[in-house]
Structures are given as C-alpha cells and as structure tokens.
Image 1 (cartoon, rainbow, N blue to C red):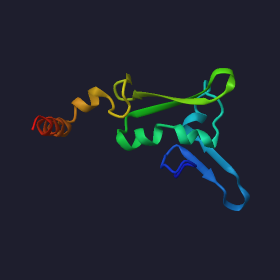
Image 2 (cartoon, rainbow, N blue to C red; image 1 turned 180 degrees about the vertical axis):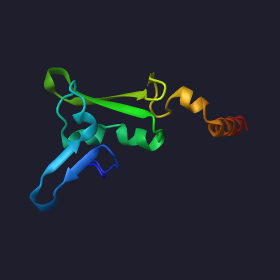
Image 3 (spheres, rainbow, N blue to C red; image 1 turned 90 degrees about the vertical axis):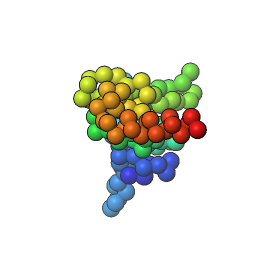
Length: 119
C-alpha cells in the first residue's frame, strides 16, 4: 500500500472507507520498545527501500522509532534477521550472506559485475 510519503510498503495499512480513519504501520505495531508511530515517520523510513532491494522470504525486519534529545526529532532504526539461519543481518539491503551463498545464480551475477568493473 502507498504510504503518506508516497512509497510502496507492505507493512503500512490505511482505511478511510465509510467513515473509518485508520492509518498504521504494522511493522512498528509489533514492537513494544518503539515509540508510537505517526504518519510523518514514513518520510524517513528505510523499510520500503529495503523491501525493494531485498525480496528474500526469510527476511524479518524490526522497526524501532526513538525520540531524539529532549523529545525533539525522531529517528527510525531497522534491524534485520534471517529466519532461516537465525542470524542478524548487517546490511538488510543485501540480505543474509548464507542465503546468498546458497543461490548459484547470484554468484554468476556478482562475477559478471566484477568483470564489468575491471574493464
């Protein structure tokens, strides 16, 4: 669904049909350590870009919204884990290194990119 910031995100939900006024981030709703989500948080959220870069079915994201110093400003922190290998992922845009190693097609693509960089 399209977020208030204009990006597509599968974790955002809205319903304005027949008098409803519901807007929520379902990724943040599952995190009790996070501040309450507001629609303007979507403008700074990296989750839609991560989902566009990495379509792994084993990727689990956790969004934590933290208030800034003295309550001014907010920041979004995203952590990623691999459900298959039960490991933390350092770069969610790239994904799990173990899952990537299991896909032979990605290795061919990576070598082709390296060869193109050498030219």
